[in-house]
Length: 223
Image (spheres, rainbow, N blue to C red):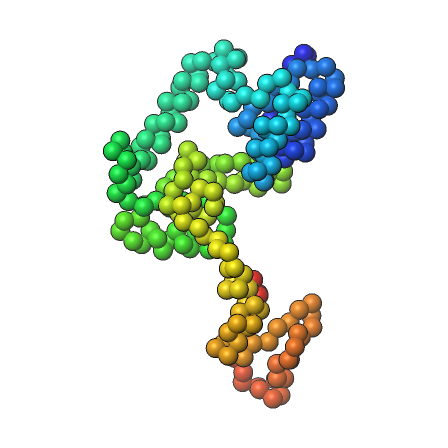
């Protein structure tokens, strides 16, 4: 073995360490850009652009990699299939050659939280369409992440870097964390009691003897 191709997760950790170890053994190292991922996009870009080239003779895209293996026909086949799928979506959503968008597009990237609910409500509007998703990458815990097909930026997605509309707003914790809402709107809320680590924080609620028929709602502070 004289040459090794490296792909994987955690670009600045396992991928970098593997490249360094192979380089120390005297092997020629090649890294395929699209097959390396990291949970921090900025760190991924910095590692691919500046750190991995120190150890790898080549840091190439998947098209150049396949062409280097003599698989030009396979490259064209994959490119045609990929471009066709994206073109079909653009036609369906009114984004054709004239560049005029006739509908708004949203993608549920399966991040959890309110993203799926927002998509559901947006799709009840006649001018919104669901844009298909694709697998983006998988982290070291085998959790899969998704993005719009073709990594397209759509009008709304719960992956912020693919969304024209921001789902997460600065200062949102004052509305999302129930305890913080008490600090700004306590006079406009029902009587609220907070329990933390099994202990009442501040005033404790009345006992069942004092309020035997009280109706209680229990909710996590960050939900």
